[in-house]
Image (cartoon, helix red, strand yellow):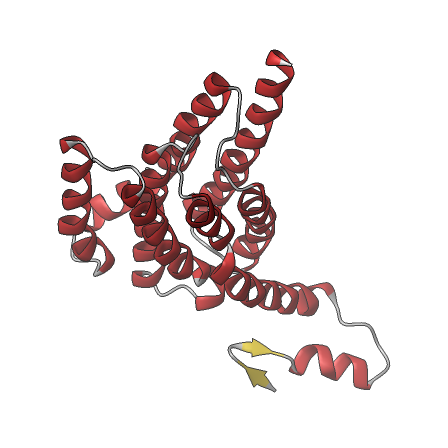
Length: 228
């Protein structure tokens, strides 16, 4: 019995015989279920942040560069996983996170008028290069290098936001709920990546997902404690 690539036959067969499913049977099933749950949950991860900005009409305390780097990281990750033929349950949330991240950056741009020349250059450069990367129409060696570079991209994406929070003594319009959802999803994705036999660099990327989502709340707490 299979549904959406999830094989229930092993687990159901064990249960019919009054036995608890073996580890090798149960873990892949749990991984698939968690994977699809993450994909479903990912459709709302960035919405609290977007709604908070729209509600307050302000991007106070938000680092544009941090959110731009997230868009770049999600683009590379999605392109690599899709073109390598990984199961959708292993990376599907990246598609929804990328869409929301692009919308979020657009909203930040809207409330950050007037935009500087360098911001326009970064945006136009992304629009020019992203379609090629998503289509996988680049040299395989370069593709692997870009995928590996996520380690630095996702880690560095938090540094501007951490510094802005710390220096301004406030989290500004940063959404705690979005940070919390990112953190929880990142931890769960580490488990599913191992079970789905994701590339080793991919597993490391998800560890970095966890790290860069830990750094931000820690910086917030330290900043508040220092200036209290």
